[in-house]
Length: 204
Figure 1 (tube, rainbow, N blue to C red):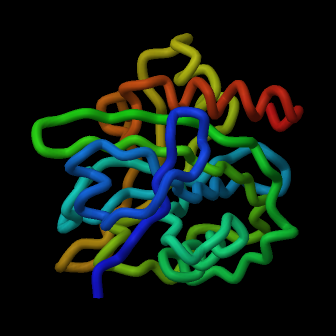
Figure 2 (figure 1 turned 180 degrees about the vertical axis):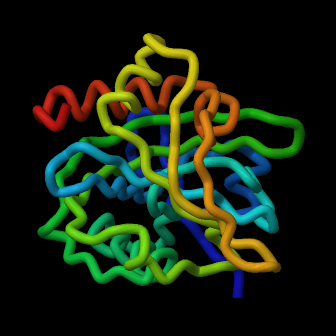
C-alpha cells in the first residue's frame, strides 16, 4: 500500500495528497511531527543518532523522535512516532508546543520541504529507559542544553555529546564533540529557529 501524505502550499494550506515518493521527488510541502526530549530540570537534551541503514540522512544526529504525518493523521497522532522509535509512552497533553518550523532541503533527486510541528517533552527517565527501533534509530546521546543553545547560536564550534550507539558487536559508548555537519536539517537554520522557539517559551 502506497503511503500518502497531505500536501500544502507556501501558506500552509492543504492543496491535496501525494505519495511519499512524489513528495520528495517533486519537493512538495508536507507535515512532520518533531518531539524533543529534555530532562525535567531542563539541563540536558536528548539527540537521536539515525541508523546507518536509513535511506535518508543515515548516520546523522537528529530530533529525539520524529516522523511524517500521513493523509489520515492529525498532529495529535504524531505521538505514535515516540512509541515506535523510542519505546516510550507519551500523551499528547504532556507536550509543550514550540510552534511550526518550515524547513527546505534540496539535493539531487531528493527535495524535502516540511512544515514541522515541533514539541518538547520533559522526560523523567534516562538513556537506559529507551527501547530503540533499531532499523530506524542507531543510538541516543545527550548534550548540555545551554551548550546546545550556544552551539546553534554560533557561539561555539562544537557540541559535546554522551550516550551510546548500537553496533553489531554490542553497544558502543559515545563521548565526542560534534560539528554542525553531523546534524540533519542544519542547512536552513532549523536549530537556530528551534533555539529561538525555546527561548520564547522560557525553556532556555
